[in-house]
Length: 276
Image (cartoon, rainbow, N blue to C red; front, side, top):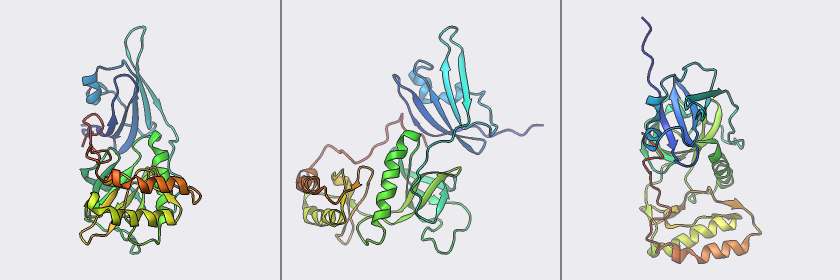
């Protein structure tokens, strides 16, 4: 008797009725990327498409599939591809962790989640420990790579600067392709106007090393229990010591940012973005 194969699982998805819908799935212990063209399925099916794709092969000869519907006969078409997907190239930390060895425990945003490491023994030199909650940030799809690549490079510039940002614990890879990173989890709360002086001091430290943050909303400042302030989320950051005018505008906007009540920057998980 042929053993029953595990069912495919959706790891990430971004659904659109008008544009392509993208999915990152686990099938036969390999991550695959699916793109479903507009008009192929109705919105309800796009939210749970795997039951309509039961004929996806489980062999390792493909990693991408383009799914469409033939306009002449309305038959479903599946084009399998084996592509060299784009990854992060600025690989500067010695530790690389397989994304399948990270157990997700809490989703934070579409690309960030809390996790624990569940793989084999780690090198004694690493600061990552088993069963310790960390923050993982990944590019789910190729078009998210540039933002994560930028943030990876900014963290390289922040190495050795104590107390300004979470420690960078290592890179995350998907079958060898680097797609993100692991950070220490910082306990604290979002900033308010009462934290203005501390936030200004933290932002000045960042500016003093020539980095523009790019998104100084209140949720990108973490106020720790002892009152110290740390910065997070460097997707929009860049290094330019000559950008003093931009830095000044960024600093001057802090008061307004810290009284913002719309929730901008807090992070939320629409149901059509991620499935646990």
